[in-house]
Length: 299
Length: 335
Image (cartoon, chains in turn purple, yellow):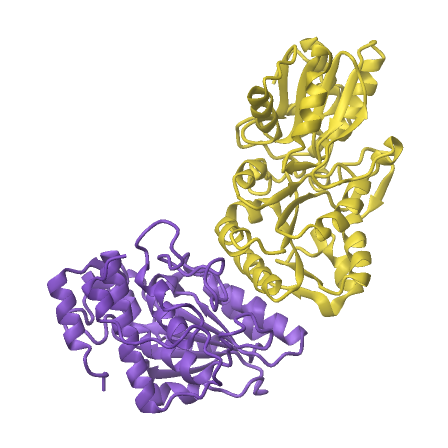
């Protein structure tokens, strides 16, 4: 395979399933990891020719916090029974997840070079459990993740295990009725081992999320459904960490919802909060601009 | 339907007949065979959980719920959640039996069953009451299209049992199968007929219940019971009808169907409790064409491609030609 400009710009990656014990990253390291994630996403989309830039960039800090500080996982044993689970319900932003899993050591770094480039590659447009170690649930069809998370959290309770189930949802995705079916049941079954995060970037395919379908005061809505709810700047890693890293089975008997206010396309000036960058083609000139802008971690 | 065919006079039926069981008066039945079989199996299989969407009582799952309350999950009227929470349970090593009505599983929860369960080949058993024309409540509750909908779903095994014995034996069999299963359920007081035929359910196997030289009825679900009744009726007219029961719609037992349909060049009739489109009839027709098997004639006894009427079940079964009387009249007309 020919070396493309996209590939040569890739930062060094750790070896696959490094046997070293994992130490949660420091705040400086987390910010750097978030930066690397955005560069990885850009490279993957450059190789593919287009991609869901907006929603990929809005959830970078959330995934970085989960995979490099919060979640109890073992890259050498992706299906470890006691691991924390993560359901990437907003599956369209797959490269953000792929970068996290590769940098954390779940998958070989080479896979990144082949994202969506040909039939049969391991990293396809949406995450697939069938091909990708570390992916707990195949996603892409929206509105599935939270209900599946309810089942996994119920199973954890039945098995008396202390793992947590994290579900990352898009704010457009929560228009789906299945999400609210899940919301009711999680409260009914007191699933305090379930943590949901809404990546509230405010933009859908067809326009502003509030115009496409007004969801009103989200925090109060989830509260009314019986959840413990929080609102946070979704790009603020120090603020995210304590909300995500709750004690397992903390005993308040409520599922936890974190409304993460984010910016679609965060980190690239010409993509931020621009509807057109939900999914678009990137030109070589634009690619150079993005890489240039992503030289420094976001503050 | 053919107006010229006289329907025998019957007592006036009330609304309760719409939800009554399929059993005719005096017929041997067993109560809630699915609920009892599942509760019994769960004594030894600790991974079994029962889930329902506010239809535990009407899918006989209440028997399981009473026996194993700690493994019973009421998900409310939320079929999407029902299927996906079952998926989540299955991912963690449990084997959920999720129950609802066939219309809701097939029409409302299709996407969720397809992608959250079948795509990952998860061990979820979806057991659904009111398949085909087994309620008189009208199109909102009549799953005349479920087989057509589900046959195209990869990885999904489809089972359509005939009677209480078939259901009892199918439950451990589908539990032993690793992968998603959709089972059509007869609930309440379910007729018992197959115990007289030295029958044993085997997943994926068709069973020849009786032989006959004039015509072969290939059938699934309770239509096998109707086929056996039809064969009895026609025997009085010296018409010799064989019955091949096909309780597994997918994967189809192609070998047995080809073997039986090839014999003697006799007429083949496929009888099913489903729309004439996309069910067992079309599956068998396709198989025979692909295999070069040419029976003397091929007919389908199935529900019309229409939204059916509401009313008392016996009346509807006569109207749409799936009562034994109507079937035998039609079979005779084809001979």
